Amino acid sequence: MLGAVVVPGLIFYVVVHATHVKPSLVSSYSEHVYSLFQNDSVPRYLRAFLMFAQGYVASGDLSVTEWTALGVEPASMNYLAGIVVVAVAIWLSLRRGLVDLMVLPALGFVFLYEPSASERWDTFVIALVLALSFRLRDSMARSNGIPIVATIVGCLLLAFNLAAVRGQVEGLRRASEAQRAIGTQMGEARLLHTDLDSGRVVVSRVPRDTRFVVPGSQKLLAGDIVFLSGGIAAIEGRFGVRCAATDIAGLCRVLP
Image (cartoon, rainbow, N blue to C red; front, side):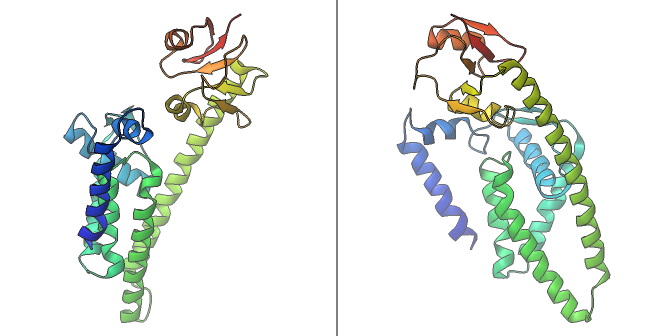
């Protein structure tokens, strides 16, 4: 089962990476995404993977000091809690049931490719919940009731999720503050000129009614708002315009 699920995906990734050349989106993305194939330190990658494991699956805490395409540096020892997540995944797979065996390939995929993205953990979380549910069902059938271990696990999961909600609320608060700050700098304008990579950086920080346009699809005019993660120098050099800086790094207004 591990070979049937993991190996074809790995082969597909290698083939696509080898056969697509710039400016292919697939090649460009695979060169910039944080993955086992693209990182600057294996020990750092392992620590980051464990941080994401405990953050996206249990506590909701993703405390990092650096978050780039090449690496993530945990800011605390919380990543050690990720060992528990991995241990539970291995323990579930030891039962060798079909549902349980899906847990480990799902975890393996996240380990190989972009563990920093929350959506990569969806399949693993679903498999984990299903496998735990079947384990609980079997335990209840044997004991004709709810065993104490299942009660403890349920309470821990509830506590973890409450902690995760707190972190998500804090993240929403920071996103709202960023939206207000960028909205103030944009004024009445609701059209933002940016490229695909920079758009991914800023999409959650702009006002909700903002529309995006890729620079080059139409000529930049005086008053247009432009954002590039490379900063104003990159904007002026790339598009041959003069730009007035704002309080937001990389965001500027085109001058006449």
